[in-house]
Length: 203
Image 1 (cartoon, rainbow, N blue to C red):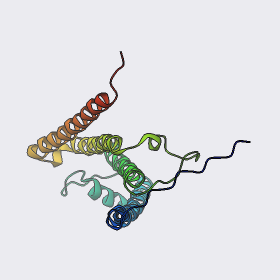
Image 2: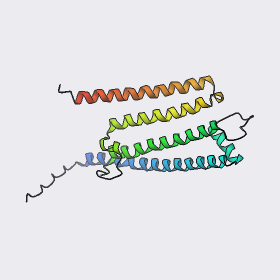
Image 3: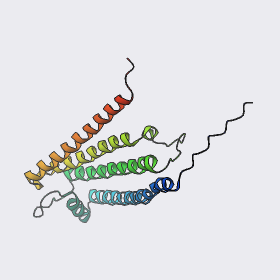
């Protein structure tokens, strides 16, 4: 049998490079804080969902809370019951929470894997598909795409209840959304150009 070759020894770092390299662990409390933030989002999601179910069962107090949270209607003419628009606004809010939670997962898992330490998830049945080829550039594009999705949800919620917003607010939110969209396109295009320069077509 051929003996298994020993792995090459790790190069020893000097004191200053070792300290600088170890400073990446200072990011660990930041990622732990994001995990706590995600727990808050989970709690908020279930609170909103419980209020929606209670309002559907005829609870007027839960309906009042939902109306205030989504900013639907006017204070002097509150809705008399749960209608399709209120349900749509609440569901869009729940989807918004889910998309922000997905964004947090990408930042936590992808950021930790890219900037702090390997998680050694290779071969794990629950390893995210995108994590196998994640790097700083891929993470930027994915985050930009997620932010566009979140901005789209906010813009849709605003236009559904457009009577509660001024024209200036509607225009500003639309311009901000377009700015997010153009920024994501620019990041994706620059990464594609950089990839093409590093991997020229042999033909």
